[in-house]
Length: 148
Image (cartoon, rainbow, N blue to C red; front, side, top):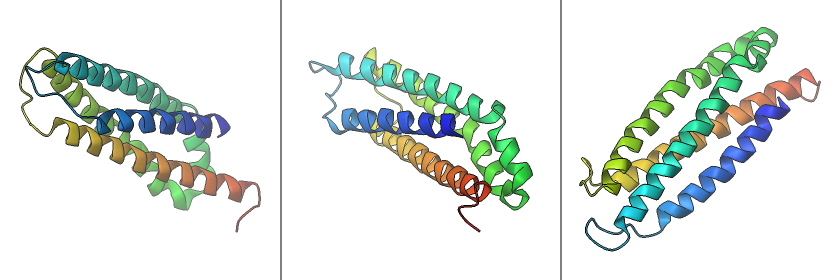
């Protein structure tokens, strides 16, 4: 569980940095810097997707969730909810990656709210990670006898 929690900390730092990038102005297509902004957005999405894919894989295959489900059968639906959200989050990131690449090549995004949509996916991911961290910690504390 320490590896998962440390992973969550690194993920949180990556998201904070990403959100700071999103907070800076986006140059309109045709103006100086729009290629760079689109390329950086695409690169950040690719990096996040790659890190998240590996992070989710560790959670799914590392045995921690299976162990927690066995030790805390009543928590099984909440653990399943966490795992079930993984493919949707990754799919949302892939969709945005395609649009960001297009923007960096001078194509108008299909949806002019590209930056807002990226922000929404990041917030969804933050909520997911917070919920998961809290759940894992709460269940692990019970195992240590820290909670009843």
